[in-house]
Amino acid sequence: MVEASDWELVQKCQAGDMSAFEELVSRYQQKVFTVILGLLRNREDALEVAQETFFRAYRKIKSFQGGSSFYTWLYRIAVNIAIDAQRRQKRNPLDFRESMDGVMEERNEFAKDPFADVHDKELRVKLVQSINDLTPEHRAVIVLRTLEGLSYKDIGELLGCSEGTVMSRLHYARKKLQEKLRAFL
Amino acid sequence: MNTCGEIRESIGAWLDGELSGAEADAVRSHLETCLICGEERRQLENLNRVMKDIFESEDFRLDVEPFWHGLRQRIAAKRPWHADLAEWAGPFIRAPSFAWAVPAVIVLLIGALYFGSILPGWGVLAPRNNFATVESIDAYGRNVALLREHESKTTVIWLYQNSDNENEGAGETSDKGPAF
Image 1 (cartoon, rainbow over the protein chains, first blue to last red):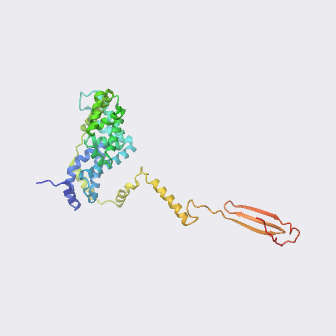
Image 2: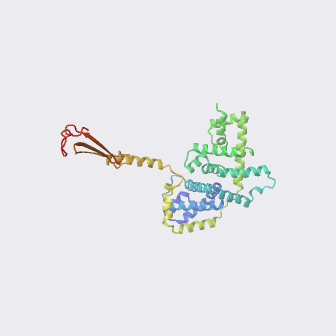
Image 3: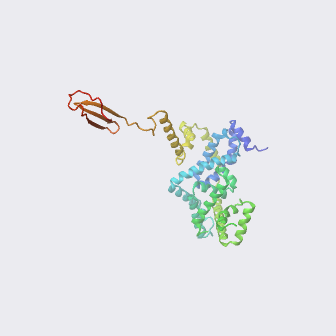
């Protein structure tokens, strides 16, 4: 059986077919959640934002004309909501830092490799903190590039900016991280 | 000839494979000879590696079934009217976005000026009328002029000696009138 394309599923969904939307969700829920978690670094917040992303996509799917791929359109919604959520987190930095630290300890991220040296552990801790200190826009380009491996063109499409802006944001984001971590790199 | 500063700005994009052929060649050949920029490259590669490790070591798995169940329930639920309104108005009332305020103030000022030009006295910048009244009365052989300025509530009184009628009786009016 030939798998329906995204556009075919979108058209069915626009006609009111809920099962078509379920198929779209099952195709992209993991990818969307991964990007959002990479941006927010908090599982509960990421789950909430992922659900909000698909909810908004469902509500607005009739306005989707196929100008870009469904995947790009969906990612754009996800990244915009996640950036808004990050701004809210920035307003409550203590809560966010505590929850982030809790997650890292809970998963015992730094103790996975018993031979990992102190220097590497310290670098990782500092790097996580430094990524969290980036502006939402800078964090978005870092995550989309490092985690998703997207091209500058695709990142620009998702964030609604030019390739040059993506290059510039990536340069300054890395520069900030490098400055904070120079002693560890 | 590219300077070290220009090259360093391009090393990240070069490592990402995002530079065109000529640009990539320029960065590569510079890195072969410049130790300082070579160190910059090493640090960036290390940074990218650790970031990738951190992201990859995290558990990104999503429990698919509860996720879809929760989403379906949310879609089926009737939303309150204020949630729809908040979603619709969200982009316009987002707190940090005050960019609209500047053009709005300009439009208001232009409107006030225009309104003032078609309805004198109503515009914000319309000139205020500072009415003054001048009265002239004769009493007991003297010419008296009063100037009342309403804005500042000032009254100026002029007294003119009428030499011709100085000795005439009360109630006589001067032919010449006050010389103001």
